[in-house]
Length: 234
Image (cartoon, rainbow, N blue to C red):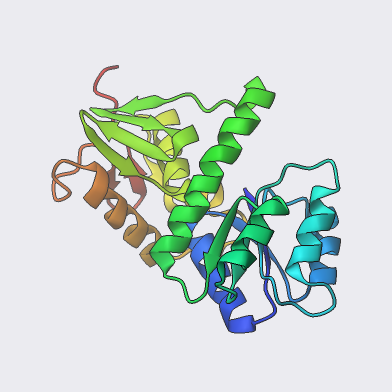
């Protein structure tokens, strides 16, 4: 999924991009409203994060123009304007959500995941080929279109990248996947590989999906190579 981040404050923009890319999203950035509209047509993003107070064209007008087009791309307003009327105006213009600055990383991730789930559900209904069927890894049921996994009554929220990693291992069950293969599939060809990045991601994922992270049964380490999932049901 690709997200357009339109924000004139560079620090806020770069911070959002860092959070989103860590989640597994591709990003494009705009520093003003005019650039945001141009990039929307050029990059065809799946979600738009939109500041209100921007140079050239403000966020309200950008949203108004986007909603005048034959597009249902989700729009999340991100703004320092916190008055209730500002939120009402944003939502009446067709925005899907409204984040108020300053905001925490966990809040941003939660809102983006919620919009992503709605996006996946809409796309799946419109195009059956996009339907992400659930799959099982040991006793864990992974639901890609929900960005979640379940074990009995326990629900685990997952990022887009974590879903990609699990799906890749499941598809190639029994095979040791080297680091470059995992990076290319789950980070993209343009990403500079770092074993530390991959190991940290897997370590954090294990803490949430493994019954015993120190003795993993879903994501096992293949020393000198990478990682593997062994499907015991085969």
